[in-house]
Image 1 (cartoon, each protein chain N blue to C red):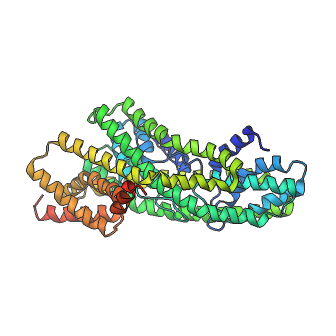
Image 2 (cartoon, helix red, strand yellow):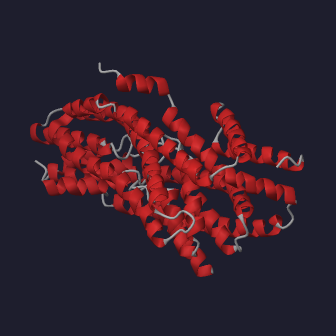
Image 3 (tube, rainbow over the protein chains, first blue to last red):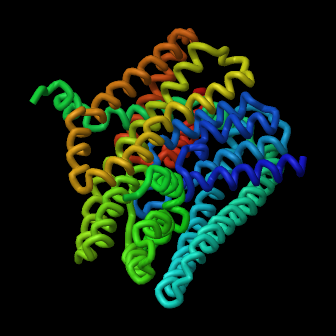
Length: 218
Length: 257
């Protein structure tokens, strides 16, 4: 189990590079990460389900300008990792894990902001080296140094968050009231509908203007 | 004149443009990293010229990563003019970079991430619903989702990265004409329509397969209403999920559900 967990953490941290640092070929999207991790943990159902859900629910989240939104790669990996550690009860349990992961993912976001601030430090140091000493080759070192730190920190974050979430879920879930569990189960079933609305708002934003322009020949 | 090989290498390196993204100067180091190789070719035998050129690109720069190659191509063309004629284009290079970055980023954000990505997701989802058994997830289905999404999404992305660099390098600032043409095609409006139709298709398939009773349909409409009200008030997804959970907790304790 520990080997699989380490592998999931490593895969999640490497894939999250694609999110905002290298490539942007979308291997970091939940629709890719979910099924891949589902394959590793031997639960394709959950992997695909969580992948699609996360993709739809946060389809309107953009890395535009200076915005650092929540990291969906980490989010998906932590949910699936925690579900792997514990025996998979039912929908309510998965929903409970999603709920427990939400605050953690906001903490991860703050840490990512910290990493970007650290990047400023590396970039400033590099600038001085290039302008004064003409050490151009240091660019390669600094670039990969920054990337390595990002992967390493994310690896630790995923591992710690999976362990923490699963332990919390294990302790708290059994103490939950049956009615609360019922509400969790219903909320999980409502998630695709929320995702549907997120997408509907993307495609119907400025609906009238868009369609007027589309059929306007001038 | 830069060779095709140099341009391809530059396009490949452009995948790293965001690698040292920071809050102060954003993609400055990434831009310098991408330009190092072509600039070393342009300023061959002119160490001071090469050093000055690299220094120029340490300034603030931020652009949508897919659109960066358009600016890189234009910049390389201008750098070539500087190296050949010793023209004083330093100010122009930085002006071109900053003036092109804004509009190109807006196109990249709204087209690729705002529309193309959700449309491809829906396309893959719809195809999966149609061709695979949803109740029995298989390895073939998994591979279809992963590779279907990655391949369809990345075709325009990769073409743009490689072709834009070559065209922008040859055409210079007149590459803007192509961007103007882009708006004439009304691609974004067409994608919105396509996305809407795909969403409608998935909804219809769901309704047919779910075979909802009247009561279940009523519940579905009630959830629709709650989510629509929250979404209309621009509530975030997390807030909507928590609100829906609170509503269900209330209903569960009132023994309504």
